[in-house]
Length: 209
Image 1 (cartoon, rainbow, N blue to C red):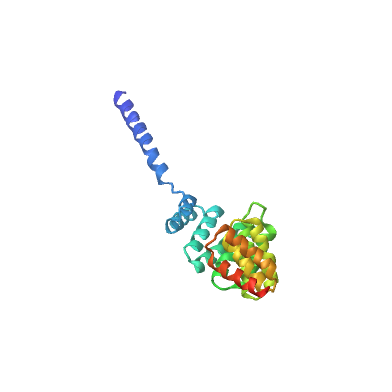
Image 2 (cartoon, helix red, strand yellow):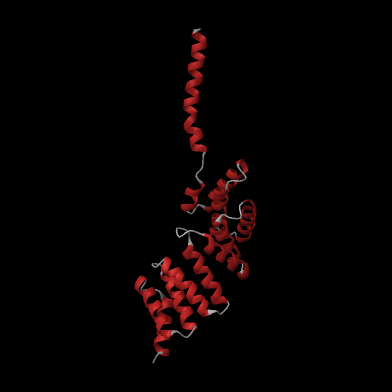
């Protein structure tokens, strides 16, 4: 009986000692992503998906990490895979838009950004989607459309000087010099060393003389 009790006690101690090891083995992919450790986050997500191929959270973090790691082709492929599993996940819609945008697939990117804006809640990353839509419109020389999209982006995220500068650029190219100056001035208010905004302001000031 004593030997049996000792064995049970030994097994219990070993089990308790092993708990921290198992706990440490669980890698937080989202934490790695937020720390900009994208390669490690990708590996962690792949492990999670191997255990649960339908984990949409793992797909989202995986695709975010692939985009930030500039692996745009892989990001698009895995996002398409995720979209087939759940076509209503707005995170995947936005990722597909970004992955296509960085590959120059502007028509497809615009489709997914519009779909995202139509379906995402107010708490989503709406501003980013509008920003990318504005950039696509600038590439297409649809400057008034770009003005609308970038105005929405800056309304959602008003502290990003680069977005205000791009809004100024869209308005300047649309011939709306006074409203372009407003946007350029806002960019410079947020970041006085914003060189593109300084140059844009000078051009608009000269055009209004």
